Length: 373
Image (cartoon, rainbow, N blue to C red; front, side):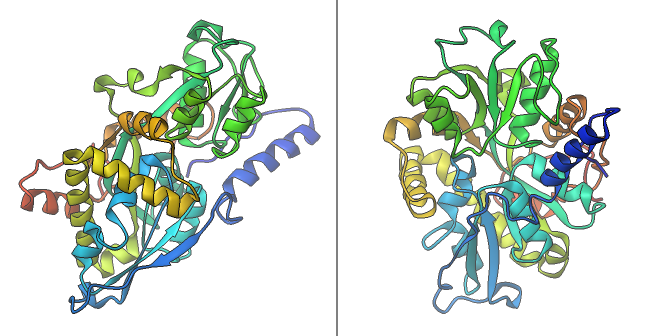
């Protein structure tokens, strides 16, 4: 089981403080950190047949552009409710991965779209018993955005203050790993070092940036595009660090017991997800309108057109979970000192997705040797 590493120190006071930071991260899900947990249920299709005899399927996601599949495909009129027929879709909106994973563990939701780091943590902390990744959703959509008056190049990060969304999250691990490759030392727990790494909620980062409290941030969309719209400069799009420009940003995960007991319901959600992604790729302008309507509903306000265009252009919807990149991202977190080496074998079960893809006439996808069987 991976653990967030506590720094070594001869000072018991410092050690206790460090462990409190670690404990805060690991129990974040239990504390409901960052979660709106907004719940909504759409009526089932009139006269539709219930899938697996279920009255409803409970699905979680975030109000982020990187969750485009959920924003477009859920709720009335979306492909996912259509595939579920007479089984109602009940949704919950979260603002942080740990809260979504805790909801899965507590059986409050059956499936959820989450990032790779929460997926890995949820899987390994349960000893591989609680969840499986069953599909991809989004690639890309993460960037280092800086104040160009303070940072003009990637060689000027020493001595600067760079934010990430959360201790140990996907962008935090990417930032720490990148700084390490540039010879810059940062304490993975406190964020102190050659470059100061400050952990802040995505919603707070634009305000801190505007007020001058940070010099830049490594963040997902749409936060990166919001910062750019407020005078920031995209210094590094993370795509440039990956062969072919693809890396996993969002997965679809499911509780293992739900997958065993209701495989037809899981396949129905996957079929709706695949058809949603196909529709998004074929209708990008209409997809952006649906995304903004969903953001108005779930986050309280839509994005300005310029920001939405920028954020949408930096993501790619994909059914492929890009399993090899999840393995590499996990290695980055280990290298940065955030995790002990985890056992990832079994985190994927792509058999249901590949059945759907074959029926849709699409190429199947690989679990990179990390499959359940």
